Image 1 (cartoon, rainbow, N blue to C red):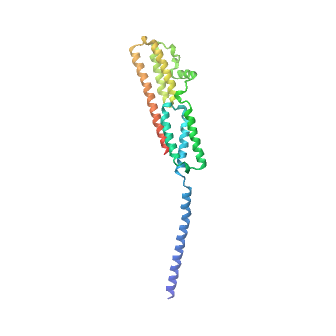
Image 2 (image 1 turned 60 degrees about the horizontal axis):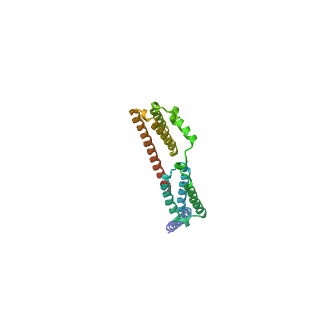
Image 3 (image 1 turned 180 degrees about the horizontal axis):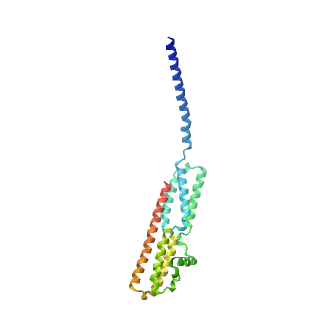
Amino acid sequence: MQKGNIFGLVLGLTMACSGTGWAQEQETEKPTTSSAKETQEPVVEQDLRNFKEWVRLQSDKVATTTRAEWPTIKSDFSRQANKIEGSFQNLSENSKREFLELKTRFQELEAKPMADEVPLQAEEVRLREKELLGSFANVQNISAIHLREAYIRFMQNVRVKRQAWTSRDWDYADYILQNLGKRKAAVEEKLTTLDEIKIRSLIGEFYTLRSGQEFKEQQKAKKQGPGKAQ
């Protein structure tokens, strides 16, 4: 009888301790779960952070943005802004003010001249002529016999430098190419057929390279815009 009583007492104590331990674990877990819910950031706050980074990106590259690119940029802006405005009341007061400031900042960017609307600077043109034409920098003095060589020199430098160019750099190069074209028209009667063929080929290469570069930049901008907004 004593052994049975002792066994029952031990079993009872074991069950009681197990129950207490389980209850303590449950109590420990409850605050953790509640705390996680309290610290979870509203989705609209995350959207605002992405929107802030997107506006910063547009501000950084506004000097190289063309007017033709602006409709796509405005479309991205409207999509992101409308998404945030749909949950505007869920933002904190500070975030509400920040969102309104970002909208104003974007409107100021839109009012600035685009890269293709700013006149080229005469001094910069002269520097670019030396950079791209070398000894043929004085375009108006290039003789017919040397014009083909001037075009070749121009394209050799374009091929080397173009990878680091912005759309503004291409504008200066295009302007220089147009000046070469004016000189070509002035001495055209003295050019050989082979000269004409070579020059046309080089001009075609220039615009092919520029179009390819612009396409890459547009694709890059599209990936950066929507990608950051998600």
